Length: 267
Length: 248
Image (cartoon, rainbow over all chains, first blue to last red):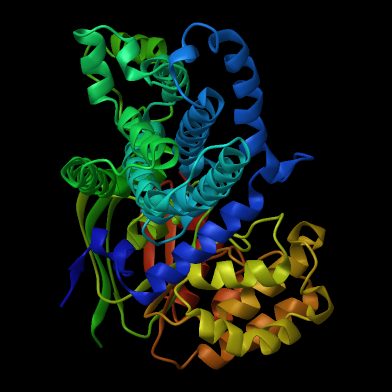
């Protein structure tokens, strides 16, 4: 039976063993290529938040931070998660163009390039958060068993990054201005996320709605509750967050696959 | 024999895709008096059928539409008009080692290259020594790819490509950079493949290779199908086109 032209590019199916083997190779390749031209390489994933921490702690610890316990750790957790989200989505957005020869000339599901890039960055989040835990312990934070639920937060963050990255990388093929638009958006997000302030710092009304709609603010709340308060956020809230992000991930994969057949023409 | 690739009046245009600036879009639109962008045909009404086991050369000058045709068959481009059907798994090899990464080692690249083209890791592992030996790169397994010459890369890529398993191979001048020894080696591989049931469509400027390996040839010129048939007869028309049509 003859099949239509667009099926020719999709001989590899999801959940096929070859699909995962290719995902593994792409993730490893992306990981090895990351920060390769820098002297400090991997260390930048923690150094960057630490530099930001130094500045923000100096600026905000007096007024904004005086009502938050362990403000330095509070800041560090927020900066690590925000920085990871920002750098990972930014790198994934450009991956189809960065690996142009693969995108335009090879036949395989191109979402693997984006997912592989996000997974390569994900390793850094885990390492940076583990260092956060060590610093928290050393600075006197009482870590208790809820901290064991931290991998759930990692999973939520990965899901969030995946759907955002799939949408961005797909749109970036057609609209290169997205680099600048996204840079501006990330600057706004820095202030629209409770990184250096507590959510209660904002007045009720539109500002609180912005926080509620911002998935990063939920993620920061989850991890800070686990590390600083030793409490697990209500399960229903976590599951709702996960379900919404899974639905968005599904939608973004559909969008990506709809656009995929024309990527080669626009690169 | 069963048809593997069938093209019915396939045309491809690339109207205005390269104009990214908004102002250029507007200017171009206005200069066309609102009638939209003028379409330029990369391929124009191509109709042909390739059967299972056919070894087909694709010849034509640069810009004749060879790569566009291969990419349409591979599913990387959509035809603007017409219909194309492909029966079976397709593999497109363009350039030397598409997907290889300069900063990774030769052995890492071998695994990456292999899985991109559908090989299982276990099979690559199993063939690893033989592949490196055939490519004469046994001492370079841990070297960074960027330290290899283009000829060495071609040997490495082709050495692994010998083990790719698919129904239809689309090759676009894939291994044209090798030296005389390499050429002899890869021609030997193709000679052994000549009577196999795999289908090959090879874009090439090497007419001797086309005569040696391909039983049929497609000649494209400025996106139009000039001839398709027995290699000898099509190549005769291709090398003496002006006798047939003085406008070419």
